[in-house]
Length: 137
Image (tube, rainbow, N blue to C red; front, side):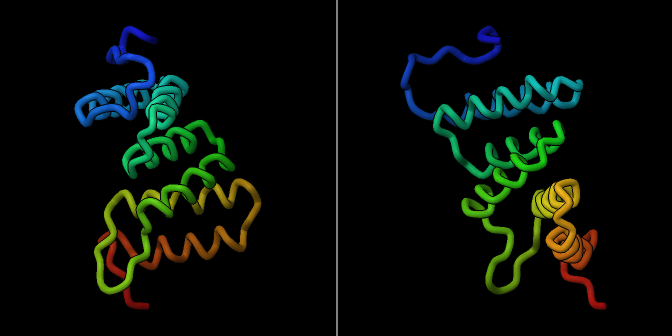
């Protein structure tokens, strides 16, 4: 797989923005074509290279979710929540990524038979509706 990763000297630190974007694009293409294992490997490599940005953490969570690694999905989502919290003070408009994160968390909790926590997460997911704004009851 070394032919698709841009060459960098060892211990060069985290990837530059352009390199990260290239690798994220490759991860997306691999996942779209069903090569989820390869996509996960690249996402993990980005993280191990020192890139712990919200984009990379989200990508790692998605690849874990796609491989049905529920426990790792939850661990990665927890790390992502520390780096880029969904819930914020004041008014804010959740992004489609925030909705996806809630869905992945609810599905992972349900798959691990943690139904009480899954129910709370699913309620938060549904409460914000398609628009992302909290819907009146």
